[in-house]
Image (tube, rainbow, N blue to C red):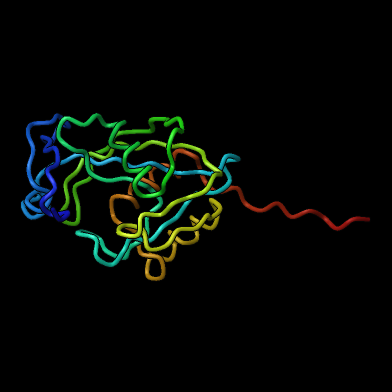
Length: 183
C-alpha cells in the first residue's frame, strides 16, 4: 500500500473525528484531518533538529521542517500518533512528550488540526530514508535565520506556522550583548 492509500482519521472543522478516508482522497478533496508534530530539542534546549523531506513525499516534497510528525490514523490517539511518527522518522523512542498546542491549519490546499509536542534528546538518530533526506541540529538563532531566508530554506507551510507560533511564545531573540573592552 502506498502513502496515498493509507487510511487516516477525518476530522470536522472544530477538531472532532468524524470518520476515515484514504490519505490521497483527504489531500485531493481538502478534507480536515489530524496531524502531529514533535519538536525535537537538545537536552540543554539550545538546539532544534531541522530536517529536509524526501523528494517523493506526497505533499511538500523536498521542503524543510523542524517537526517530526504526520497524520493520525483511525482509532489512534494523538499522543500515540506523535510517538509513532517520532520513532518512525527519527528513531527516537521512550522519551517524555510535552503537549504544546492544538491549532487549525487551513492553507495551501491542506486542512488539518495540528497537535504539537516537544521533547529533549541527545542520543543517536535513525533517519527513515523514505521520509527524511537530511537532518541536522541548529541553534535557535540559526533556525530563525533560516526561517528568514525562505527562498534558500523553504519550509513546509504547516510546520512553518507551528514553529512561528512556538517562537512567538518564546519572545524575540536575545540580541547579542557587546562587552566593553577590558581596561
